[in-house]
Image (cartoon, one colour):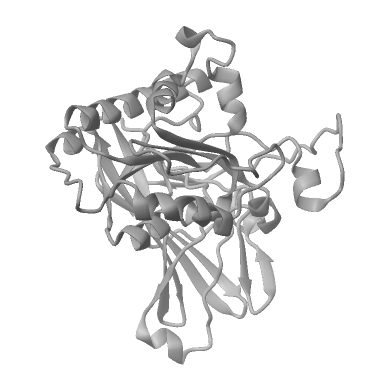
Length: 365
């Protein structure tokens, strides 16, 4: 069974069919989390390289500063232009700078650190830079940015395929390593999750070292593992709200597509669309609804489609189709789903959104 909890933000590049330009229906923007929350999301970015003097000390990395996409490019451009042509991007599901404090060897107890391989890589690297808080949008477009700067398409690799590659120091290569472990299922403690990902980092770096391949590496995450402590101050200028409890929202049931058993699970904190400055919250029309129209949904061992149809949405019928793929990853010895794309169907036309960064563990029975 592939049970996919597709609950990540979609900030996508669109690809339109020619007929779309001839119709009145404009692309819908899918927001899985409220727009205000997206602006508050920051994740750390850790950079290191086998080359020297790629980064000067970052003067703006103090607590509370959020690195924008423009600032991030000023850090990355020199490294990509002067540094190694082989670039590794380790992409984790969740990570916050507080994780390094809580689970790292910051008090000298290196044996208890969940980041022993990462810490060792930073200690030995001739160049390194740690950005504690990078704007989520900057990170979400990082793969595209690296691809454009290097002139090389991203190659999704695991440990097995990495060992088969023959990297050349003079030819650009962009290797995307999705760290397989995630805490979203609640089956693993955070320390175990981080330790498992750190072991993958160590194995990848050992492979490159054995082949004497120069490289620049980056570690970041799709989303933060916890809410920033000073989000009201940073994002809204409202000052600190000490000891204030967040309101507890009522939990709703996820959308469940079943045949002989539950096959696809879909839940989002907020499911909102906008058309010509009109916002429509689909959350109460989607989750916990018994008669939700799932016509067109299907599932098999390799691929699945979750189809959600809404009548009279902005005066017309609109169908959202989440296209999923299921693959086995030897590094984690388990199956993972990835959302290949989101399709929005209306008035005989289709809008495509690339959402390939949305992924998670499958539950196979």
